[in-house]
Length: 411
Image (tube, rainbow, N blue to C red; front, side, top):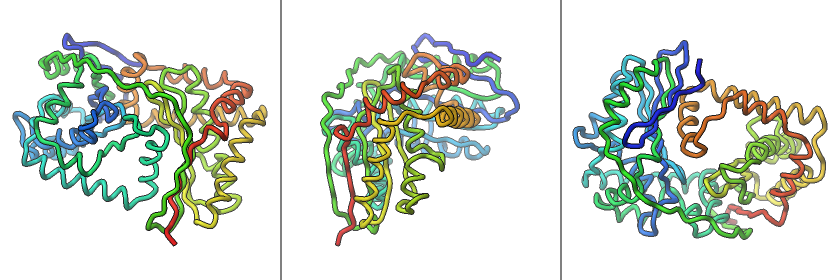
């Protein structure tokens, strides 16, 4: 079986398809190279608001008919927004693939942004903002972006601000789409049991009629990083902490090695160094994780954890101690082998999830113009040396490069 097939329509939209056996479900979606970092100063939050509004009315459907189209046959319709992407995607039984393709085209390219629905959804998003503020473990992740990236668009909250969200009207959405939509930077990704011939037929039928959009936008490159330390008192019961810095961009040769290093430090495994040091040895935290978000021109890595206020300083010292170990002590032969096998297994299991696979394929085509096979990725992982990891740790995990954000309970 071919790993994947890729073809392009005359309007610039690329379609990537992977046929997988033994499934009755098709997962598919549009990934647009548009995100919150593309917003202008008076547009903060509009990309995420657009994601909501795509479900609220098109040229031929009202909101109920959009929501009911796949739900009524047991399918799912969803969307998300990130700093650099907007995605509209669906899952449905194979016999409803036609409906999924048509509906996704409709909400992605033919939304009409009804004023009444904008007003209704405004309240929903303001409630979403309030929900995040009431959840410090989520809020600290958003606010740490601002600590690292400052006033740069990457430092702005994807949700926007209450004032910006209250200001949007139909023309604002239409202008944002016009300013940013380039069909040559749109990928439709599909994973399922359907053959390529059917995917081509449906893509030409539904996506071929989309006009060729060619917005010329220029993303503002992130400038010089300056470490920051910020402490806030909040009405919370536990201290929440973030430690991190800028990191490698998407196209960097060392990105996979850095990901492997952070997986050792604070990946999802219970045997991560931070979990063993903070939770298993001392019981200071319930959860601790190291996250890595690569972007087109820079990246972010951060460590997040919550702990009792009285243990906040000691927990930070333990984190910094683990960073120092990675900088000073190379992994032994067995440690390196174990780290490689763990990452290989995690990536293999992630590809077993066909929704994740579909989304990964679309993003990879947009970001890298290719999709690396698992075998190729595994080969690269197994070629990593302990010296390379030590060098990367010394280049990225120095104490003086770290920024800190701490939410402390009010006395």
